[in-house]
Image (tube, rainbow, N blue to C red; front, top):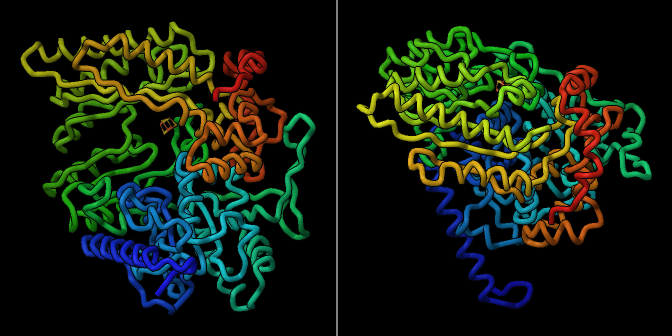
Length: 594
Ligand code: SF4
């Protein structure tokens, strides 16, 4: 047997890669519990894709929820695919259609639907990579009836799907539990009518409230590059897509469906506790996009806990405001009484009291993450963090008194109106926490470590900061170096930081419109060389990243109405003293980075 180019060696290589990939998939599946393998050919086939490696994707509760929803539908079958890790066969088989689903080892082109679950903008390049590895056309307009329908959901696409508009046939924004079954019903009915692809898309857009089919909408631009209008291209489809949040989250159990020892969170059984957040910090996308805050009842959480305890002895309680759950202590006690441990994804430091600290200690937790976010009170107020320095010191003291001797502190730099004094305030605050730790332990117990996680602030759509520019990555780099210098000889302080280049790219993909898809495509074609892609594509990235937007502008993501009033966001934005300073910085910040 020879390949199309007549090369026997190449065919043999592909065969051996295929074999390697199959073996790897079989091994992964053999270690999993809870996966579903339906008989191929018995229903609409969905391949659920996570644009990152298996280890990361399997720790994502949203991804697992979509898997469960589709497989619970009798007329659907759902399998999984992940970004190949380095060394996997498919990694080097570009275009050869070598991406195989985990369960039935089917190539992507055999599925009716390819569904991406997308949580992070930095995973966008992997979406294009996976489409290519699957042998599918990257652009929606180049696909036809023979190709799977490429759909996407997840928080990143709910915040702003526009940079990916050219690559997706359908966006399914918002919370999946209600909209996905509605989509599946309409998709099946449309298929029975044997509609062509274009008719199918139109049918879905008219039948399923909350779906967004980007090819059915057009965007006009003003001469200065801003958006003039976004409008539907056909009659009978909504001007704006309204996304509803689920009223009763107890109606669905959102917990780990498939357990795998190869997942990032292998030791924990994940249970969702809440959605939304009552604090609405100004920078936080999750707090705003999943409003209003909703908490699961203790009863429904404990049912999920009981199921989890049959598999693991650690329960990971996840959500945006876990420590705000009114019955958190009782839930943790329930877990402890059964000889198991609880892990808490996020802990608001002003919610930490003796009871919670003791519960963390009993739960065997050795490291706790706290998020002061900023060093100065001025910036914490700007973020609407709702905490003062004493809250931070008290929280650290309480944890150390309970022998929790590793602290992780989250800070952001590059916040609107930030100055060098605010950076000095981070250094001062860390020193105060360290001093508190040492004095509490009286030198008798070894206080271990403070890990500082310092990330550049990236303005997110649907928050009051959505009109703010990104701070110059070079300035932020200098400020992070200042913090690193301050602790360079201190072995108790470890500093973790992001990469400025990726912060810029993340901001571009967060704040971009449809045109930024061209940059993403160029970066893909150039093997991930963003510097060249930004140089070669005739689009100024600073227009999206370093420009302060006017509150009267049409923003790319305005096509989706997620339920937060833009007026309310404007009010919050204008309350910030920094808002006006940003506007005057419009020209000064307009300098290319690459
Ligand atoms: S407390 Fe945390 S989850 Fe809630 S709004 Fe603030 S940053 Fe977001």
